[in-house]
Amino acid sequence: MRRRAVMGLIFATLAGPSLALQAQQDMTQARAPLVPRITSVDQLVPFARLVLQRDFIGQRLGWNIKGGERVLFSTSSRAHPWVTEAFIRALRELNCEVDVVIRDRPMAVLGFGQTGNEEWASQVISMMKERLDQDFNKKPEKRYGFGSSGGPMLRNAGIGLTEESAKYYDVIVGGGNPIGGLSGVHAWTTPELLASVGTIYPGEIMDLIDAKAWAIIRNAERVEITDLQGSDASFTWYPEWWEIVEGTHPEIKVPGYESTFGSLRPGRSEYADFAGHIGGTPRYGAIKQTDFKGKLTGEITQRGLVPKLTLWHDRGELTKIEGGDYYGDLWREALDLTKDIQYPGYARPGTGWIMEFAFGTNPKIIGPMEVEELKGVAQRDPMEISWGFPRDREGALHAGYGTLGASWWGMLMDMPVNHYHLHLMFTTYIVHTRDGRSVKLVDRGHFTVIDDPEVRALAAKYGDPDEVLKTDWIPVLTEDGKLRPPKARLVSYDEYIANMPFRMDDPRLTYEYSHPHLDVLYGEERMQYYKPEEYLEFYRKLGQIPVKRVTEN
Image (cartoon, rainbow, N blue to C red; front, side):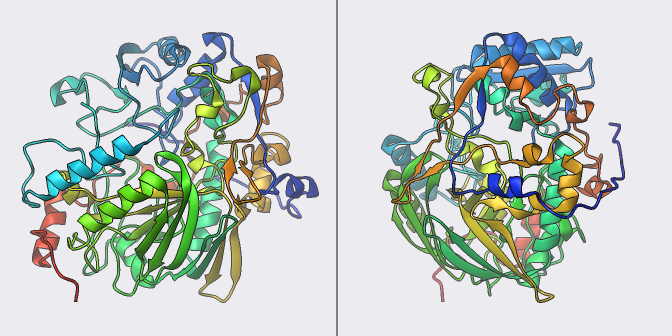
């Protein structure tokens, strides 16, 4: 059994955020953090060790290494050799037995240099057409890689593990675990990403930010959404959404996942999503009265920056997609190919459902930056950081679409669920609560619960709360509404460490979740709530499995 520390926090009462912090948090002013001049692996090992030792909770990767475990470390040649060596050395310092696999294929994470193009989009559509010409309810002989987030894998998966060989390892860093459990692809592909403040940001501060946000969203009745790039939408948060989360809805059940991402539990709707991923719309399934209406406009997608993309909605679905170049073309064709397929758990046919509107909670996550000394340097230039990477920055938003609630059926049958993203950096999100209040939860990209007195009191235990809670990375928003990377300054490693908002040797950075309510979501049971056959049988009885093409009434 893994030991969990359960602590009670006593918060000091403060008058509110300081004027200095309020000035710092003007989210319309571009900024970037100091960037360390990394000259050796030695400088990276302390960061790698903290990541390996901390708990894995939601969006925050960690592997809970105590020392002496048998570890498979799987990475890609896209990662800088110093990053790979830092993790290996940190594991060996922790007396772990380490086997290493380095693949030549790109890493399947929001990390360094993830891009898309017309060739990629064409391949995705070709694979969709090929799969949809076959029996929907029979697993195809050919492996496509559909059925979960994003598009299919367009390359061979490379080295795989059998269930028997995987059992040899206590922990697998880098994915590839066929038996579930603690596994994840590390996201730090450059020395500068690994050595960023956001990589080791105090988990208990983010836990409290999460809790404050969920207390507001759980009481939401109506939401209004705008954005400095042109978004304007609204929707009602009907009580039935929470029945889906709690597993009590009579016509919609969604799969729980076998890992720390599996936060769906009966009667536990106050934490309806995983840590660091605050759900600003209901997730999974789609009730008949869903009424999300309006437009979302942006440039950031899962495949990087594209020309302006505008998504129009009615009744919770996409009705029109404008712009977006090759990515918009891909999305439009994918929707057309699946427009008359009735996926399990959805009120009407199609894969244009909005089912994710998630905010990040870490104020120190970074994105693309201009650093003069690193321009053009292979595996080092911060301009090549994916525009998708800062989705976990506090107040940053990614809107996701598709039929992800049917993902178990989709993965079993290798069917596309069309989970595509649009990311927004300057959202304003106003919650009208059931008890008559109006709360601006996000203000032009700033998560306002960060200014809460209790959050500031906790941050003060680590350092100056103004610096601990300051948002480090804000992109340039041009006069014509386009995003550009901010400029950053390279400094010596010693200067960088001296300017960090908390001490690198603070033992609390080796995060163990500390709130008792998280036991239900991330405790030892880590159970699979809906077994695949239970999920499939539920929809067989409703007549939605076998899945077929239908004509909407």
